[in-house]
Image (cartoon, rainbow, N blue to C red):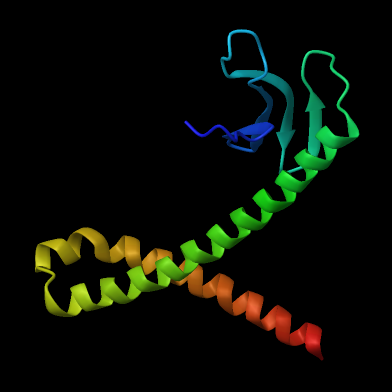
Length: 134
């Protein structure tokens, strides 16, 4: 393990993370992690753990991590959408070239409903954007 461990560790969870202070400067020379806070990236909440007072440095590091995490999650969202576009193209090719009648019977209605729903939302959102420009 690297000697240059970070001062803070963030255990990612669904809506944020648990924040730990990493300590290697102890008599046993063990890595100790003390939870200092829980953070929620959805609402920006930072809750100190166990009645602790967070230092300005703790808050700075946590807020920096939260900003980076929000940006990463936004990037992943758009990447997932680009992947969905690829899957739609691959699905169209599969339908045209390899799908059996039985396979098509299994997926056609679900695909048509999902695509209709997506098209409806996309058209409505595009119309809203066009109307905002005018």
